[in-house]
Length: 265
Ligand SMILES: Nc1ncnc2c1ncn2[C@@H]1O[C@H](COP(=O)(O)OP(=O)(O)O)[C@@H](O)[C@H]1O
Ligand SMILES: CC(=O)N[C@@H](CCC(=O)OP(=O)(O)O)C(=O)O
Image (cartoon, rainbow, N blue to C red; front, side, top):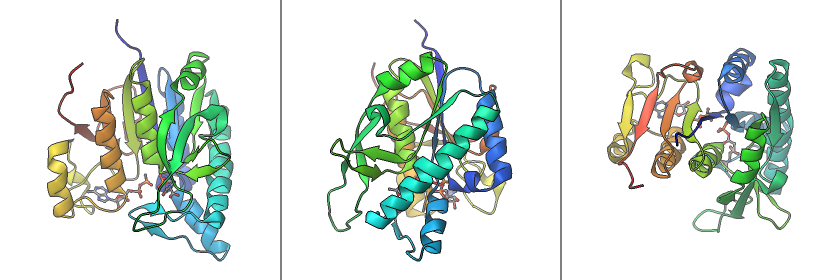
């Protein structure tokens, strides 16, 4: 039997922080047909708030060093200010959005990242997603809006990269849905040269990634998108795209499509 199409959209801090781009994105999200999930970041807003509070954040390879103070900031910004604003704006667009962290309904379980060369503090690596809860909400006509927080089941919230959450959530739902995962940011997709929008890669194969990293064509925040995007492909997510909010439409998508070797059924 053909599985229904589900769209998982990930949106990051750059699109969210500007009112114009956020509103455009949310309008397009609200207009998408079928079941849908929105996963949002907000890293830039968290960095701004910690700076204002006199404790500038430190990021290594795009991951925030999350001490007790930075965790409080992350909870205030991700589960609070950003999540509730996004939900309120979606409700104004008649989209039945419901905002959740990974602790709500035991939605996303994680373990605190072990201390290696770097101590990331309260950063979580995902070990499970409550896909049943997501299905119940989707069947009830709700659009879950998920922030970048998970929990460890022992009373601790953990900060988890929103690209990773989007990938794991998409992967957990692929048994029941034909999932399209759209990473939405400020560029048209993966570019050969950041200053040249026309240098878009329409598709990228996983086997090409090492070379792009070596040539430094891919760097910074694009790395987690590609690592987690290819992981979603491996987990059976039907389509994975990276691009801007123009991707959020019901017809053909323009952006960078990620591709990996097909896996046996
Ligand atoms: N080849 C590339 N094509 C497009 N963007 C790239 C590329 N390599 C690195 N980037 C950078 O990745 C950034 C996106 O990562 P990030 O800021 O973490 O996204 P998000 O908005 O989802 O938080 C872009 O702003 C861009 O500077
Ligand atoms: C562990 C970790 O780094 N978590 C991220 C979560 C937010 C995020 O991913 O936000 P963007 O999508 O806007 O980058 C952070 O605190 O920056």
